[in-house]
Amino acid sequence: QSALTQPASVSGSPGQSITISCTGTSSDVGGYNYVSWYQHHPGKAPKLMISYVSNRPSGISNRFSGSKSGNTASLTISGLQAEDEADYYCSSYTNSRSYVFGTGTKVTVL
Amino acid sequence: QVQLQESGPGLVKPSETLSLTCALSGDSMRSSDWWSWVRQAPGKALEWIGEISHTGTTNYIPSLKSRVVMSVDMSKNQISLQLTSVTAADTALYFCARGADYVWHMWGQGTLVTVSS
Image 1 (cartoon, rainbow over the protein chains, first blue to last red):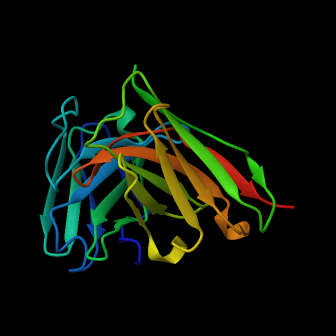
Image 2: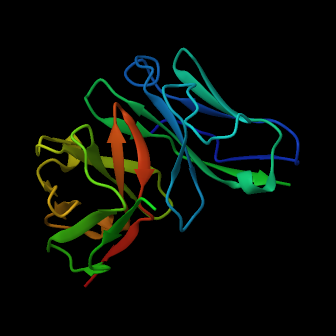
């Protein structure tokens, strides 16, 4: 199972919006609504930001939103803040009854 | 405060067995929980290794299935991972994660394991 494809880095100024894409296949992203997004500050525990493509868990800012079109899922961060600077990973359930992660995207707040 | 904490040897020799434990504190394991191990080799993407339910039902990634054993001890609130015949390619940051219904709601901070003689 190949990793889902994410851009290596995305940057934006405070207050701006950025979008991170996550491209897979019909065997994973395109075939299931079990796409999640995780925020990871190195040295800390990864944190669930979005589940089931677009569901925001309790306590997660509404500046984070998710969507999916075909085999590509996206995470949008609006009103970018310094604290959003982190690595972001998407994940998807697959038709092999396993999970696959994205390659990871480093978000930089300029 | 509910948290997960991975622990184990930071250095394992090639061909030996990597053994890690993940302890849940501040809460009790639930019947709905599925516990996963995920790893990240240096400079690489996260890789899901497998999962185990509270009953001990397991599901491993095919590429590691022959070398992986996961176990759960609800009385101790912990899960374990054993990876046999390790090589340098198994050097990674290993995370445990608590999940349900295809989502990991909680993760540990990870523990670094280096395979080297």
